[in-house]
Length: 467
Image (tube, rainbow, N blue to C red; front, side):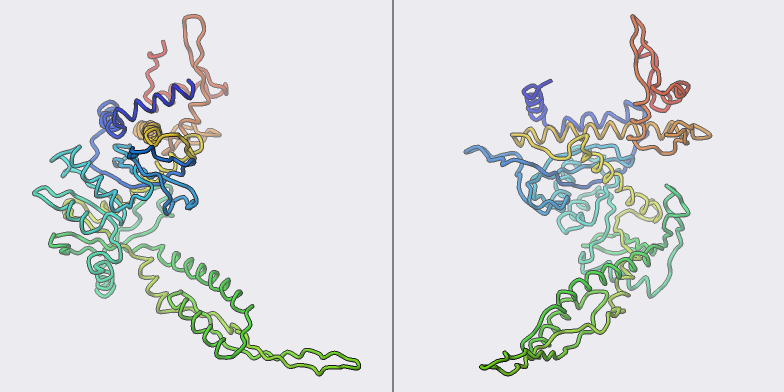
């Protein structure tokens, strides 16, 4: 393996159509590993920092635009590309592709919906497409609902979507106070520590199509509100510190600055009570033969009497922090409000894949000479994340067959819903040894040798394969 060989490999991957290549592998995973059908599709995007100029060749249009944009990694000083990922309900990657560095999420959703329609055809109507609030735009909504077999979807409603329908439903729900208790909706890591939910469900017409809005009320809304108040107060105090250091030549100037400052922070959760104070400063004159009299200098400064809570704005924040609305075209008789919530919360599996994708062991930052090779490298990285997902899913399925979780985790702790990283660490404790014409496996820690059969059962490793 050397740079030239690796570069040629990337060129071949690009020439074979990166997204299609990964798709062919991904679609075979459930059949290969005998996994049950999964009709959930989670979709999201992320950005990747790049180094280098990437100057296009004369007359050649690059396949992707490597450019500066609002980086999700907070590195607006560096160029980037974006990638989109679609996974199933288990977090196994189904589709990915590399995009321009300034691709908007709403545009991505429009494009990926068209690609999935092409992949699945009429079967696409069986699936449930789930994405964040950037999915809900007029064009995307029409793409989801057009035709005789509309695509089933779940998404969080943006505040400005469809004439602020989310706020209207929120006010109605609070007024009617007819909530259905769902209780704890997450069993991991500890059900008693997870949030409690209630739901208000109603039918609504969106762009002429019948839909259902599930407004969820969560028990951690007050905690979020308190944190928001503390953050707002801390930010305001920093701004006030700068303001109090200023001096003004006249009282009207100081009052005008108070008015400007108050207007700038009028929507904050807390506000400052500010007043103007006159400051008289005597500058002593020079003594001696040509003495000069003392001079009185008058200026004005701003003082802060106290910081108060803006209760009206806090109440609005509390309502929004404790509630969120999901829009779907799936009838509650087919999928319950609780399952709609659980499906949507499954978006975290995409985020976990992105975190895995960006680990330094894979590729924290990227430099390649050609955009085509970047696209090919991203395909390879996504393939590695797919392998991580397969290991995790298989292990969870096999663990469910044990009455008691086996104690093969670090320090011989029980193995409960391990991540792929945990399984790779456990596997790293074992070594494949060849001796003459035979092979065997031993642990680098002698006391773990007896765990080998359990470990291979969890990973579905065929012991006869190495014989």
